[in-house]
Length: 245
Length: 245
DNA sequence: GTCTATACCACGATAGAC
DNA sequence: GTCTATCGTGGTATAGAC
Image (cartoon, rainbow over all chains, first blue to last red; front, side):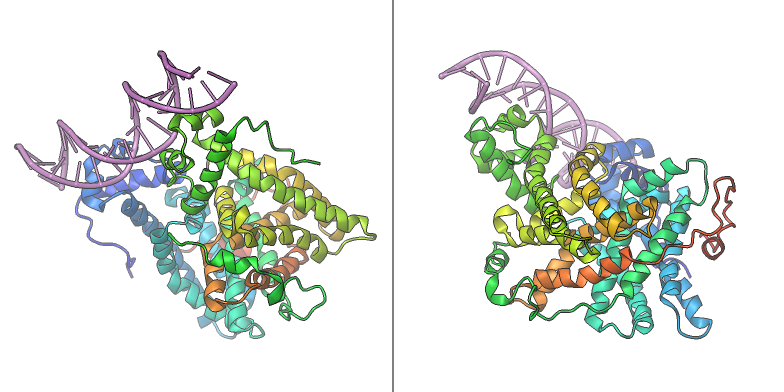
């Protein structure tokens, strides 16, 4: 049942590097973290990063996978557990299988805490194609399982519509977890209190559930106040025809 | 009635720099865009950036403000227009005042098109404190106006709850606009068709509206003087206590 | 006040000695 | 496996020309 991510850990050096990189990447972000800083904290030579990982990018991805894969595996396991326990699942139950493992990370400083979620949210909107491809690959199994589960719970949604709603949901989730504001806000309001993060999720939950269950959009273009029949907009084609470097 | 953002445009150099920076920042992102590239495209000396803007950060912020401020002013103007035309506004109307100006930008390559919205979304999750402060400052007037409008349309929400829901909504919105996936997906599905972006917003709209109107969360046993240990929140913490490998 | 040339120092990467 | 030396490129600061 080991994580499916790990290659051989050849020595202590590799481990020291990822551990140092973890803190620094989460604290300062990718670009603001220099390999010289990482190697200094890890007490290894600068060139060791290149030897063990091949470059800064790959160190980043390795560190990300080490946290992300267990999170998604945990989500799937929780969903499995719910599905084994009988009848059809409610949206609330399915959603909780996504949120609770994330909450567990947010509460565990040893797994990066809120900083990891923030880093994840940032990576999610990063324009770098390699990072995007890496992330979607890592997310794919989890997303597929949950899409299926939500599809059963929301049969009125077509396949396309379901895809979009999950997209919106992941967006609200990513930004909520990623934004510094949310965590700072709850920390400022209730400084001494535990469970603020749980409170945040209990607020996010009804918002997302209602969004998922929302009535189907009216996609007809025939409405009097519908903004754009085809003939009306000409600038879009020009935009799509822009040069792709 | 002019934009409240602009200081004196002393010369052509400053303009040439922002124009060049706009394309490059939007295309490659902040870090991947070098000042040497910008100044080369603008056909000005490298040091001119530092002279006119003080540094790369401030050039970025200046360029961002030039696009963002008109967008938010347009949103406020649209909301004003709706409010002047009579009775209380529906959530749908208020939301449309936010979405339609953004749609206008997405469709206008001369204002950055979708690239600008993507850049905006990225900036939104940037960990840099200066950038965050800059953005929240630029957003503040618009957010305040819309918060007030939504507050009237959703009187059942308390002030705090309203704040959170707007936060969630902005998150889903920013993510949807920022993500490359959404635009690529609609472009792939309907390559020749105009109005795809409008279609996306018509799908996003009911999701957001339903989320805003969602029933109030059950914040359960949280009381000011009842400190909550981990085991307290039953449905969440109980499950969260699973193995932490 | 504007603009230019140039010098700095930190960064990521790499080759080659050990 | 590890280390040193070095390369090309990045943002920035400054001195001085116009």
